[in-house]
Length: 210
Ligand SMILES: Nc1ncnc2c1ncn2[C@@H]1O[C@H](COP(=O)(O)OP(=O)(O)OP(=O)(O)O)[C@@H](O)[C@H]1O
Ligand SMILES: O=P(O)(O)OC[C@H]1O[C@H](OP(=O)(O)OP(=O)(O)O)[C@H](O)[C@@H]1O
Image (tube, rainbow, N blue to C red; front, top):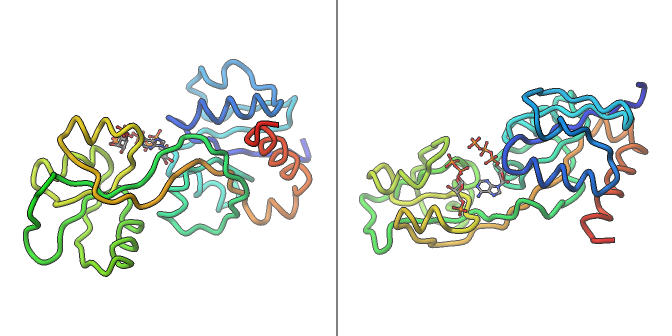
């Protein structure tokens, strides 16, 4: 398979929507695609190898060139500066990054504590606002931090708003909208330009509803 394309797919909530887009774009994916614990799925008919990675790791596989391209949330792209090209907005897995907190809560001390899974996004956001904060990195259940007194505010993803609501938190500021993107390794783009352009064009037609 000389012109094999390796695509890094994010496991988790983006996966199904991304798989649906690929099928709509005409790619023949086996049923095991959605229904397996395998981390490498070869589709020889399409000359494609899929690798299934954690969403935060997709950029790593693509930057190192072990995947030619991948699907990653814009949140991940904003958090980590990576040497990859972002070539298409797939307009799936919509959500946004926001600052939230306990309504009416008073900040303790000079620099409010901000808990987040996105320390770089949060730091640059508050720097742009001219506000000094102390960032506390967490890996999940971010909404817990203000409830338990670890932080004054959080920076986290909001989709339906249900997690904020059920934990008595309110959105304070909206930072930026998030969707999933196709990202490409720069060397792969040079060496496999026709195959990558074809895939991007087919997906882009589906995204545009053609
Ligand atoms: N409500 C949401 N919460 C978190 N991520 C969302 C949401 N809606 C869409 N996304 C997108 O999905 C990606 C995260 O997917 P997912 O939650 O499956 O991975 P994860 O954060 O690694 O989860 P976990 O660590 O719980 O397995 C984000 O990068 C973002 O672009
Ligand atoms: O607005 P909503 O629809 O409620 O979605 C937002 C929530 O979903 C995500 O958490 P996730 O389920 O990935 O769990 P985590 O906190 O462990 O990352 C995110 O971090 C929010 O907590």
